[in-house]
Figure (cartoon, rainbow, N blue to C red):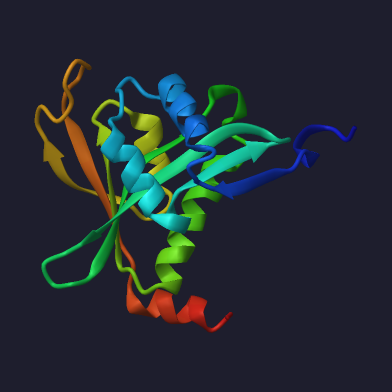
Amino acid sequence: MGGGRDVSTSLDGLRDKNVMQLKKLNTALFPVRYNDKYYADALASGDFSKLAYYSDICVGSIACRLEKKESGAVRVYIMTLGVLAPYRGLGIGTRLLNHVLDLCLNQNIQEVYLHVQTNNDDAINFYNKFGFEITETVKNYYTNIDPPDCYVLTKFITPSQVKKVTVQS
């Protein structure tokens, strides 16, 4: 076999048949347990929730929820994005996030946001590279984990970015 990064990575849609993979990943990746509504929202988001495979092994995921704002516009909430530790640094998280950002561009969705624990510098730096900014601090957002506070990170996608991508279609 080839060495290093020659191993293929692929993304697969989240379905009833593979939602257990997401549950197993979340147990390994996150200090919180997710309820049935989380998984229902992830399934309902369609192409916005994906599993990532490295050489046919499920190693990461992104799970989103589509939300309708009072104005009628849709925004995307990234509920979770994670990659198992041995597979970090291979571009898998970047590929998952770029997938969702590309969907937003193509569907004229102009806002994406998420919550990050205030001490999770790696995640904050990761999202900053993609143009996310801290827009709010929420005290006592988490229960049973320390620190309990989180930042809301938001990325606003401008119409000029939308035009740039739709030209390619």
